[in-house]
Length: 211
Image (cartoon, rainbow, N blue to C red; front, side, top):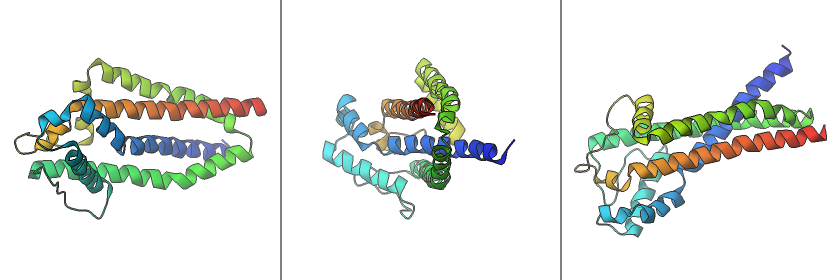
């Protein structure tokens, strides 16, 4: 295998990781989705705070999850138990890992795409992303067959404890972070990822016509 072929394979991995982590980043920061779900899921029926106060607490939570130097989680209107704090800390680590991978892959991805453009090889994106586009669809079908089981399996993969099983009595925040909200978040993630993958196929096919 030629060195440029190896470079293209490595570059493809970096670019795929960039697209994956970008989709995750856009999903976990989709404040508009939570705001929409407040109405769609009638979340105000499960708390005594107003919509404005609920969004303020949501913003506090997101600032904690997104910011490395914020080391303590404190919500204005919701107590947080030790178990709840542990789970949010573990979620924070996953958030920061995602951002780290996104930043780390940006420059190699840029160099990879620049190489493909210079060599008029953008058409090579078509085949790998034709394969990749099926992966989110398969996972989405599995999720649709039973989100409860999927949700439990997801936590089993990424967490090695049961701190994610919140007690509403000690962590009432869970009442306004229902499973349906996470279902909507997964749907958004898969839609974004499919869009990014399909876009690569379209770009590659367009480039192929120009060769």
